[in-house]
Length: 311
Image (tube, rainbow, N blue to C red; front, side, top):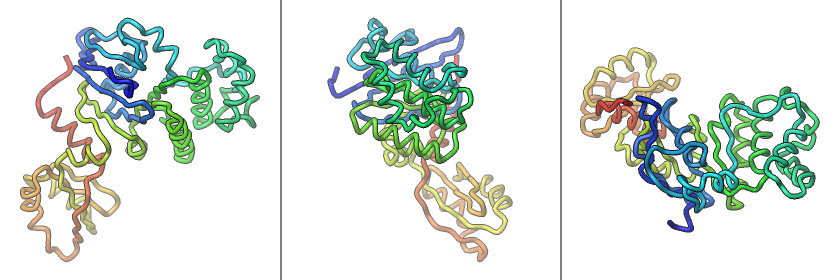
């Protein structure tokens, strides 16, 4: 066990009846890092998070969270973790301040009145402290939930799709707070579907069908995908996309307005597939770097092409 690691687990498995929800997941997260958990719905992200923070016991596997054994010391882990669930889970008929005071008492926070005041100010909630939680917009609800998660000064913050349904401005402000917390030494593990949020993480872990398919920085994951990508501007992108999808060597075609992103795992095969279209005067081609989304789709398709199914 390394003292530099907040999370160090290996071989985690979890079944729900016949469903093998998490398959041999091994992951480590350094203290002070922001680690992004990505993957489609049902990929095992929430189940893995719950095993890490002591809310769920793995069927097999081992490891530590904040230096505590995930199998035998779950109660100790829970005291040191702030966990934000997907669903807003506070009392909607209480004000922001009343909810935070309740949470502070639940954790046995010393001098709860002072701590609540400081947290309200830190998260920019002082002006809304008397507003009922049920009347808050999505962005303010998430800010209040984050305040509740950090009241007891946890070492690890687990955020399960914290900005789903929140507008872009509120998402950016929320992430600014996350980076401030990480700069103070808090470790953050966050699941998200948003590629721009993934790119704000120090390291990313990608799950599909319960398997950990890739882990690393954004640049490492894109480089590891092995994809070559070309962009083409076309007057009729729909017709061109249909034609390109039929060509061997083309694995993905995605439309962005009048521009198509065309990718393949074999650079030579992709060049051959695109050759008939290279010199059409109405098309403008240029090579580009694959996006993180391109890399994740390629990983998912490769994983599912193996024929592995949840069982």
